[in-house]
Amino acid sequence: MTTLDEGAPSARVQTLRLAGAGVSLIAVCYGLARFAYGLFVPAFRDEFALTATVIGVIAAGSYVSYCVAIVVTTVLIPRWGSRPLVVVAGGLATVGTALVAVAPHGVMLAVGVIVAGASTGVASPPLAHAVAHAVPAKDRDRIQAVVNAGTGAGVAVAGPVALLVRDQWRIGWLAFAVMCAVATIWAAVVVRTPAPREPMPREMLPRPLLPSGGAHLLVATATMGLSSSAIWTFGREMLVTEGGQSERFSLVAWILLGACGLAGAAAGDAIGRLGLRRAWQFVAVLLAATTGLLAAWPEIAGAWAMLAVFGAAYIALTGIVLIWGSRIYGRTPAAGVGLSFLVFALGQALGAPLIGLVAQLAGLPTAFGVAAAVAVIGAALAPRRSLEGG
Image 1 (cartoon, rainbow, N blue to C red):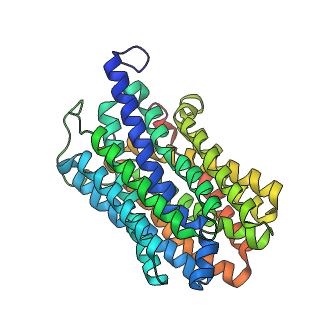
Image 2 (image 1 turned 180 degrees about the vertical axis):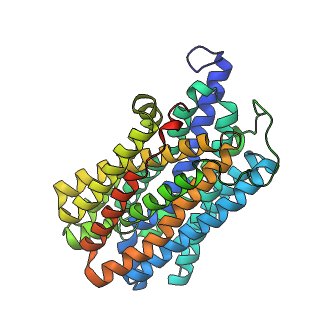
């Protein structure tokens, strides 16, 4: 079988081009259109007089739009293929970030965040589908994890932009819209829907909808989604209000989160060495520890270290979710990725307003402690050993 190391140059180039376009699209959809909202929460709070609960509700709206989009996309992939859907994903990211940039009030802000959030639900399944059917099996997990790590690249870009624009946050979001448009064009040129290596089911939904191990996968991912919503939505707020950090230092911490998230690209290799089950347990415990310790130590030294580790752990965890879903749904990997990312986002949609409510009633440190406890539960819901062989 052809591999990246031994195959023809054309196959290697095709794989690298697909990986590059995939990383770029994931970076703008997740790192800019979706997760940059949490980065700008202090500015939005001041500009539109938002409470913690409202901030959480807006974030939840983004996750809900993601859920709707991922369901629709999973249904459409067998009919449309990858290319049209990655263009839709980039278009939603471009429009959503532009709406945020020009928002005159909180309602328009929410609309922009919701539209931008939908882009992520459209982006992941078609990219997973393209990789699953274009990349040789030996390299598939690695390329899936590398593409998924684009989130870290996007967050790492969003941080310096926020640092440069500071109070002029609208300029930053206009810059995000331009970057989203460029990534969309790149994906439209590169991503194709290759002929599958084996017959592709044409049903609109996989059959069975929940194969053996499917329910376990979905419960585990929902749990970790709920826990991770604390840092993504209120992480920077924690640094500013509880840690006493300046806007500049809290932005540097966010840049570290994104930059270290690139280490999550090693999720595929980690699974190869540790196995799917141990890799999940390891990164889930890391996520729990960083969330809890950030609440206890929000000052510069502790916070920067915790966010750096969280970035790597989060991206690695989502990479493991992607590979876990692909293994459970072997013949329809896009459906496996779509469903697992759907429930991950549902967990985040539930978690964002809940964390906001707990923060409003008992303070941010208590809310983060609750989120850390939920992650510990998620660590116990590791994949079954029967999946270790891929």
